[in-house]
Image 1 (cartoon, rainbow, N blue to C red):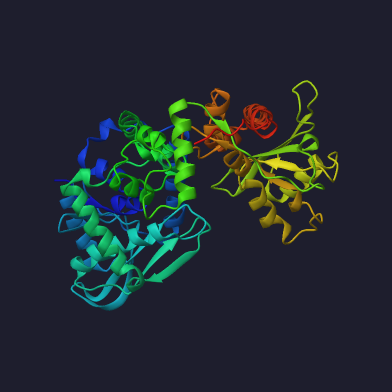
Image 2 (cartoon, rainbow, N blue to C red):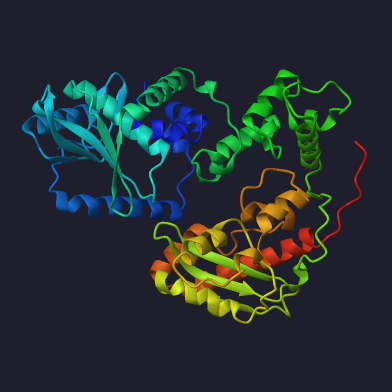
Length: 463
């Protein structure tokens, strides 16, 4: 039986089904990693190497995946009092831990007058709960090894900052998650698949999607939650087709709001029809700016570096022939503000700025605080993602621009590459690839505006 690892604990918060499959299936059945996923993982490893280099770390000597030998070599280093141990191996009770760093601190233990704390190196900009749980998992194994529970653990952020926290704050939750993972090890079917945003980056996504499609699973209905699926199944509604056929005058599930049930049923109907449908949209104020005069603003980013690699503006939007598309590729974070301002200089100050999702507002909020922001600029932001979700009912869950392009427009959203490749292109100095990707995205956004936001809703059908 496979050992429980820190990766299982880390992954459980994302999806218990992911953990169940990792524990029960062979790694060869996984989807191969994409180029941008390998690039991101390598950047994380490179950052870890840069961080530990000046620490003069000790490393246990053992053959790859010979964990028992690694655990013995790690224990020898701990007994000798090595100040820092990199990639030490911890084993206890069916659990395997390979923390990034073990740090020597004062205090009696089975090792002598010292013991160790766990520090993990991450490539995120802020500490997260799942990362803390992984550190506590390693700490719980370490406590068995050295016969002492450390008081603190730590997470190193990509800024190089060490965030220390009390193990006691997470210990109970970590113990509970650990037991749940052990239960999945014994009964992998105890975690069912549920289609959600994180599935796109999962190495089991193809397997789960095929299983859900064959089952006509309720999680493929837009707006479905784990709780709503459980309630519906309790009331005999097991598939999306059954939900679409349910009469609203039948007895409603007592724990589901009638309006939510109506919305879910409409979404299930859209799934059976395999096409999107337009919803009745709210009446806009008389002084609301017309979207006909709007401009499209698009960003390509490098999340690891917290950088915008390219700004793109399209104005007017209406037709490809009449649209003027301009690009700016800032060479540094300091150039980003002036780059966008130069692109917007030719846009009327009353024109709405259409964008997709939160990248533009988040960037503006981060930069406007210490710069001379244009009064009223953020008030012009118009999130197409929110409007598309509100004004069109999709036949399947949509979590990003690629989903809308594929479902609504029937286009390959990755015909110019995946957004995750932007950092790869930037590193290679391939500005042409960045511009081509942004241009294709702008075309897709303009067409989504025309097909959904500019279209008249279909007459409501009686239900």
